[in-house]
Length: 107
Image (cartoon, rainbow, N blue to C red):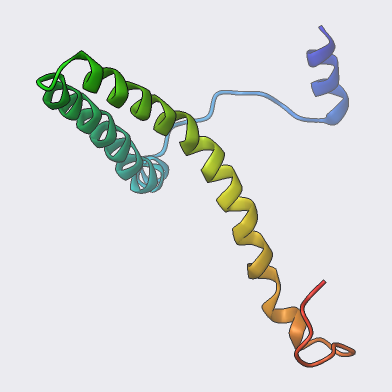
């Protein structure tokens, strides 16, 4: 109820949008390699798990823990690297700004 009132007050209209082939092509240019990467990573873990299983349960348990930690660390490291990448990306223009001291580190 509240959502429909907010839509009416904002002037937005909801409706069916026809699907366009060119938009799907643009999305799949990025999404397909990403999906293949995820599939390849999981298949690699499955194959290596089978190979490590030949060395016994202790080796299999160790690899299982390491693989699970890898899955947990991926989103954390992705978030950290995204934030860290933005810091040096904004710094080059600051060195040439008026009033900046040559050789000083950006704030």
